[in-house]
Length: 413
Image (tube, rainbow, N blue to C red; front, top):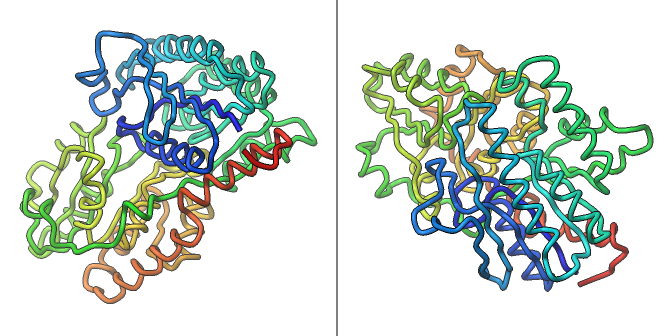
């Protein structure tokens, strides 16, 4: 099959969704499919186009595996500036649309990733131009996640976002989501009889790249962690992640010189978080690390942490949990009860889940693991086995391949 993929990030960009799509595309190309990607110039790390990629608004080339990649300017803006960010999305989407409809070879199917939801419009335009089915992949459900975090407000703005959401859902041949909670959310917005258009295809960890390894790493030496028990959050430090829980936990365990808390990442909420942690010697902040060091970073932790603001677990699934499990580390998650992550953690037996914002429960879950080395190792082994069993790039790419084949009536490449 010929596949056209529209996504906001792609290797070498370091955004988690870019890593996901890069792995899926590589697997599809390895299965003999001809894949063309339209994406942004690398910009995620510092919210500006990376050096070496500047000077031209559109670049074309070939990625590993023979994947044709067209990169366009992302018009990056700060997350807190809603109007300018919306204008940036509009400019980026216009360039993606132009590149997608001008591609030389007719695709058999189009895959568009959200956020930003506007890429659904680009996907619809390309699918209509080429008379191909559109598969709309939701990493987060917009506008729900934006409303829950307060990123968008006002009755008219919310109503317009809802109309855009419904417009794209109605024109997609299939909508793929990461969890049953997200599926229920989308199905409730579709016309009766269209619930079958929603498919659950979760994200994954690259288990060949991220493996359990010794905790004695260069990363520990670089950041003065020594042989202490490390409780780590690694990822975006934004307003969707209530990392004040890490500050509270560090404060609760400051009497222990054998424990250290690490926040590895950057984002708009980090300055305020660092200010609230001032004077805590057992809380260390580390900037984003190169992608190739991800397995080392995760191996440096003894306990991995996932946090998500209340209400967001029904519109989002933090993909970082898969990487923690692939690294063979137990996880403590602060997320909405009864949603995908707590179910996964219970099924895999790989850690503990507590309600969002419940600092006492979060601290208790951390405390229970700190001195239980054998229990942590057993949880890590079970988590690794869980992701090896079903959450791999090969399994996810296979699910997309089957979906494309069903939509196009194709039995193979």
